[in-house]
Length: 273
Image 1: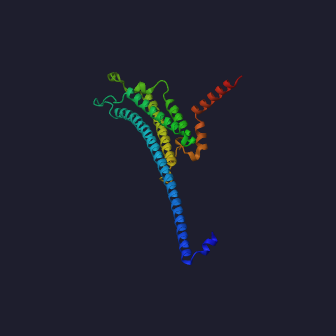
Image 2: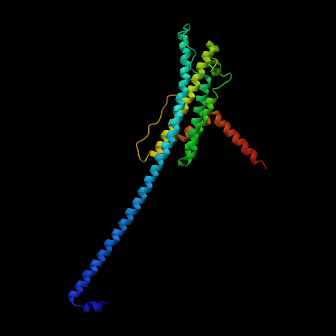
């Protein structure tokens, strides 16, 4: 092949060399373009995948936010109803002999419905946590906290139920009488306890919102999320970066201890030959 090329005239050799160089250059250029197109395609696929992932995260956050807001609104309605009832009694103290001061507008049946609505809405938040547990297994600490809070709220309903005793019932308003001073004192303590528990539950739900912001929206908004720092240690903030500390506090509640004791008894029972 080389001998044949050398026998060719110089102009022909030059033409062949030029054509060969042109082909090689074209081949190199085509290869570079092909590689670039492939790289751009892979980058586009990666970008589309990332965008879809972020879109999905935003959708999850919006669904979570809808459920948590429902719980917080129910908490406000519940505590507001108790405060209005206490204010109604306080007004009768201010005007004890005024006939125009009517029976309190609050009714026990309405209170009970608000109580049930608030409890159900917090259970709804627990369901959301269980549904998206795969995002971060440590999120389960919020489910435990809400179950603890609901148990603490339930324990405020000690017998005899002062709200049953002191709130008017529909259709029996004429028979309603002002609670005794002793009942009023105990009632104020009870209302304060219920409001405390509901506020704590609502705050823990807000803590859950903050953690979900970090987990789901952190790539879009990299700025740090400001956390609660309550002065009351009983209203402690739940945060995943202090997981062990929070878990230790929750384990001190009766609800968690009873659950662990029951689990231990069941495991011991099924472990027997």
